Length: 160
Image (cartoon, rainbow, N blue to C red; front, side):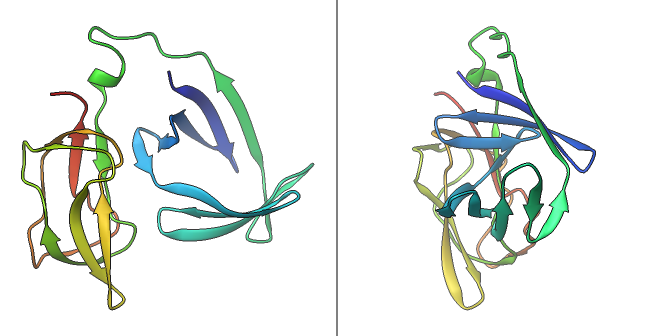
């Protein structure tokens, strides 16, 4: 079951869910990981960007003070068919670039970690993998497309 939080950063609220190592912010999957930690200082990679975070009485993000509140929320009540069955995960690229390969088609069943598309950016090829297992829906790119980082490549629905 997902752990739900209400995160407020400088007055702007975000709904955060964490489940089995996956993070969703406002119902959008975010690829995030802590790449280094020293005491109360963290280096975090999220959505293709690197952030230096210092935790303590005050929180700083890239050396700028930020006002942060975090409140744990009660779990969502399961919907008919289970909570996960009603949720889809949008897949977005970590950066803008050009699609040089598409490994799936709409309706394909994929496993977590399976390569969906290959994105060329900054003269490097980046494999964009499925963040969750499920069925590919709304595949919106083809080989040769130039895309922005905000572009939804496809969605993955649990099941099948």
